[in-house]
Image 1 (cartoon, one colour):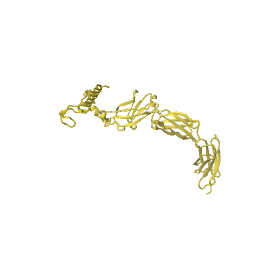
Image 2 (cartoon, rainbow, N blue to C red):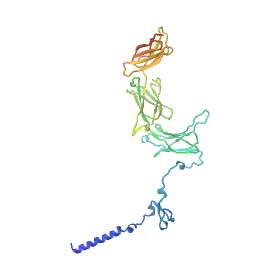
Image 3 (cartoon, one colour):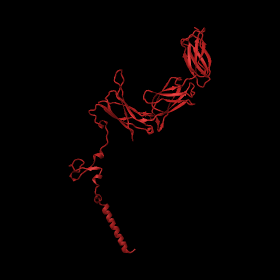
Image 4 (cartoon, one colour):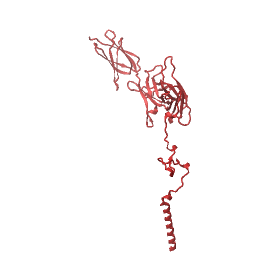
Length: 373
């Protein structure tokens, strides 16, 4: 390379270094950029107002955030709506829905009932039913013209075939507006029933009916038949109280059993719905009556009669006392051998045995005991 070319390149490098120092090393030059238009600023620029704290006096304007940028969102129920001069109340709320009920909803209605006891000849409690419009998003409702009451109101949501939430609110002259009501709609849950006899053996091929009792209204009766394990599972049971009837409707095997079903959405472990169910013991077998008399046939009242099943893994024991006719009735004795023990003060204790055969009809067993005092 020629010396003249080296000189030219060296001079160019010196000029570039001086220019870079002038741009980057001078703080006054680096800050002289034109500001963006005022419309793009996230705050407003105030005119100077003297030397108050936070202002720049007469030497320049001080930037401060606008009210829209700094105001914190606040919500106060008392300030949500002006209730001055109201002569009746309003209830406003939401109806949260779980995804599993979206394709099951047909109609939604909100029912408001006054919590007032009905007295003879008195005014019935106030009630209003408001249909809820279905659309996109969470359904909302508003119930107007609610009389002021010292009893309070119960607010329910009803959708056929689903569980509806409820809550209690006060609507008075001091608090005529309730806007924090949430009434969720949730699906029913599985409920299983196991039928067992006194020996814990399954009771198969037996009718079971779950009859709704009291509130909530609108539930249907459920019907099923126990399988080979003595069980029946009802897939979609709504919350509330039910009376469980076992056996044919014309000839029930026992008195109804009361069960309470909880909403499935509240009985979860993670995403798994916890099972609900109950076991009902159905006494079965033949009726046997023990007749206790003195020698000569006079009945003995108040004698203690005890029965024990023999030859079984589970020991069955039962006892009762004889009536004025000397009778002690056991309505359900399973087939097999039974021991009987009869005792009464001033009488000799009596032991005996008898057999109950399968499909046996009602039978009587007679026993005489001897008076010793």
